[in-house]
Length: 301
Length: 130
Image (tube, each protein chain N blue to C red):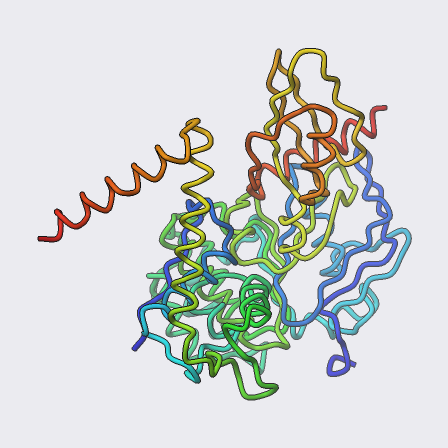
């Protein structure tokens, strides 16, 4: 039952093969009241993951639950409280936004007309606009409005910000953060924009070539990564550190990237004769690139 | 009405640290006083568009440092320690001094040189004010 679900969704051991692509043994879950950012390069499997959750395709192995309902078997029930917006969706070009709003309101009893009117103002679009005359950004805003005004328990957005200008993106992030003021509502969104993900997500999932590279809460995720600049005098050899994700050696200066940083590491390095000259935190974007590069190197070796 | 939080992703400090610093600063200047209620975690997250988990971390650390108190089901408050403003200003100064010592070491300044530089800055500052 929806009311007893403690998780927005859970994927367990999910696999799905296509001709040139395979999603393998995916384990991913999102607690209620949280936002998860799904990050990955093009073709990594983000949209496939979302389509599996929406019951649009069936897994070959593993189980999927959305708001306590098994998917795809009970996808129809789950979807009453799930709203999904994807980059490649299109509204009816012959109708106005207002026509779509009345249509969605009839299908979903939780439709909030007052909120829909507020969103029209925030997103700077009009109900009497025909879809045919809308720009790409306006079209995305129209779809987001139709999803948000349903007041879904789970909102799933596939690349929601890619076609939006900075002002519209700002408005969208504001609306998303309003949603999770309610501890029972959750959001999953995939994005290339790591700055947005870093700012508003509670959980982060990195995916590359059909594999989950890493998934955990954002704070402990970012806290573990550091880039350490070292002065390595001639004759000093750095030991092989199991915590090193990357080590770039120059003639005298070295840069060590680690995903298991702790202050004790300074002592270890200085005992070897190296001097720590700087310790930097890393942005989510830098962390993402470093983890994908490492995971690809491991696959090749 | 409290002044709004300003969170920047171009700031080298992590988001949770910016939130901690700004709350401490409000207490240091007296905008927030002992016993004052501060926004709930989800309220502040929505107001400044920063993830709930980041605000949670900032509040948890401030609680461990004795700056705020969270009462189950009643919200979060500035601690009932009246000396707090001074203590925090003290800690802020300590942080700046540490940073100055580290910068001086990178420039290979001696202790005396660093102290002389501090005196110069104080002179400049007091002349600038008159």
